[in-house]
Length: 381
Length: 258
Picture 1: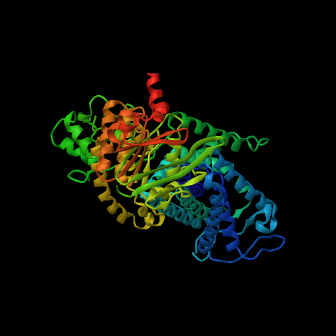
Picture 2: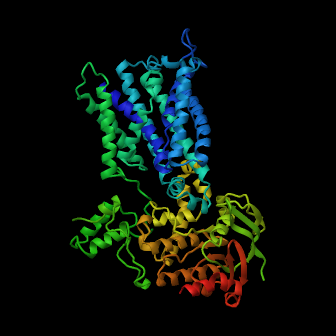
Picture 3: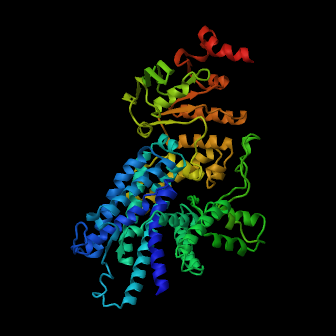
């Protein structure tokens, strides 16, 4: 059951990371308010689903909606908040100014929630969403937790498919153009603010959804559950897995999150210093970020730009089949045959532009190809 | 003479106490290639920024195809059919050469978030036609071999060509080139000259801001000379040699330095 719990939490954070990657990875906006969207999604799911507060507990709304509907409604509220914060922060602010503004926004939200008790009962927080639907589904406690894991992974998979589709769409390409050079994007007709804003709301919607799942997962939520440090882990995960690459982001969460939770379990934790383990974890994550930035800043899976394949014979061959075709043709896997295989598959880089003369080097200015696909498509060796 | 596509009237802009552009007035007819020249600090680039919406004038009017551009954002102006370049090539560095030029095709409708989620296949099919055209454009600018390369890895000259490939793909009505010959060798310069000629042959209007006077002489129908924020002369290049103000401000200075 321990592992079920770990993987459920990692799955939830993976959905969050997918959303954050749209904002940070695709648009380049370092958003520090993002964990606040998860928190608000969680709070709203609670107050929409757990019914009237019993004094002295206080919170707003107190409806008794079915949990899935509560999650959707909570998500709408989250997107509403993101619409306000995004409208302020994204209009003219970039880089560190944007980050500071979002940090200010989430700090304000945190202070309000913590100190204004009628909202979500202040520091005590809200609780009471204990395995909703367990009785109706006639499941044991453990069975329920396994079903929850399956549901979370299924939602993660759907979220992945959606984000991957967007990533490859003209929308994803346009966002990256805005990230790479805003002025050029505007010069080619893109409305920078609206592009970033739409992506921001999409990311926040995923975060709000995560909040709802998180509410079911931990069945209680208070301000200590959403300190800004939590977001550091998500950023580290994106960085490790590969910023801008949805597959990498999910891998990063599972590596960083489960890896670090597990690693820190084996650290000595003296009774007199209970904070040793968690602090050590923060330090290790800091080290990991530094190491990644030094040795592989693009992450395990780097962002893959679209590869244009010519239509025509051989165009639909995958790298392996193209390779097989080259070798099965009977020629030794070297020289021209390989060049043909490479040519079909990815990029015919052989010919220099001949009529350009000495002034036009036909090669990319920096040496060997770094992209994953060009490396693996080198042919058999 | 065909009607003016771009009419600039009494354009004024100061930065603090510096008058970057003062009462600047000139117009550009459809299909012409105009050279905008003048010494450094003459206000040429400011004019380009004001026309393309990257700056707002203090006063004056800019009309493009009858439409007032003052107060409009750069993206809105671009959608009206005006594409400008910057002094240094501004490619989208980590996108491929192909994607750079595809983006310049400007299929705004398929960039909707909702349609990208729900109609991915239809959008992809529609894009295939664009890809065929873009491949031809890349061929023209000798970038076909590099189409799947990240733009950041191109050489300086190739980045210039990519800029022109993007303009060709965008099919704008008015093109403003801000120093296209900066840091360019003679061979590439000839290619750029050809590209400008091709744009003109396609009926596009071109404004070239440039210090390279032989290039201006060869490619431009008419020249506007600026100095200290004002237009001091305009007309065919050949007539400018005899204009004492131009000689004084620009040509004379250039010669005295050589």
